[in-house]
Amino acid sequence: MKSGSEKDRIANAIMKKTTMMEHKAVYSTSEAACYLGVSRSTIYRMEKRGLLSPVKTSAGQRRFSQKDLDKCLRRGRRPEIPPVTESPVLYEAISKVEPYFQQGSISIYNADFLRIGNIEEGTIDLIVTSPPYNVGIKYSSHDDKMSYEDYLHFTREWLNKCYRLAKEDGRFCLNIPLDKNKGGQQSVCADITTIAKEVGWKYHATIVWNEQNISRRTAWGSWLSASAPYVIAPVEVIVVLYKNRWKKLGNNGKSDITKDEFMEWTNGVWNFMGESKRRIGHPAPFPVELPRRCIKLFTFVGDTVLDPFLGSGSTLIACVLTDRKGIGVEIDKNYCDIAKERLIKEASIWQSKLIREAR
Image (cartoon, rainbow, N blue to C red; front, side):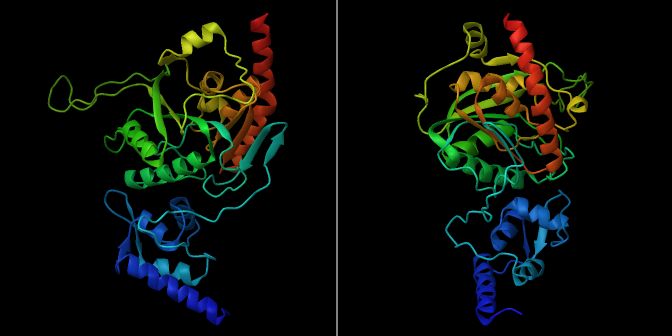
């Protein structure tokens, strides 16, 4: 039974939220998250657990009823209601968790990146990640079919947290698609880069990654006609950002990059193969070569590297190979298992290969 003060808190919360939303009958995902004081990722998890039952528009956008949202408030699922500001921040309770796997300077956390509180602000030298692309990939613990609006809101949230965790000279290598064609044409790289700059990140460069494993295609749009042709770029990009200062002093200033590597990698077009989904057991793995290049080019030996969407663990394997500290956060336990096994097996295999090649 709820106490009088608890009932008053819930009633006041509902009144405040109702006033803020101007008595709306239905809410978008972002508005529902603001109404409950949680992040959009929590809204999706609540839906999966049957706590919320949205309807979908013809365009696939979720719409939540106020009655459904008020039921959640009355259940007392949020211990605190965030303050209302001019631009409400959608956030969740922050908590610390035990590492899922830890070996030396390498750590894996099985957690939602937006919720985890283990990483101290201003401590990360480099963030390397490939976030969900929102193209309908069947992840176990993430909805990859959000509306584009919800996807960009979600992107703003985690980019903002990354910004807080980075050092003043912290850098960010963001692997994303150039654009999106499935479900409508979207300028993904331009939109995400714009959001990153609005959050506070400063732009440095864009690297074009030619994966060299794009499948053959036939006609797109109109065939041999100017009526409606589609142009598809078979590449991805790595957007290079930094927090406040590009020049990096470093903890010891020791670089391990060779002359040949430096000459090749400072060329803004990288050519190497993508990774096999079947071999790795993950629906969207990226090759170790990608984070390895980013780490050696943009950090000193011993620096701390973070991957907030660890997936199959490629970034942490690259950290082991380059003698950097590595932190990976992954919401799905099965993918944490894959990352752990790869660290145990692949890191030692790659290390042996590199030693042999150096001889």
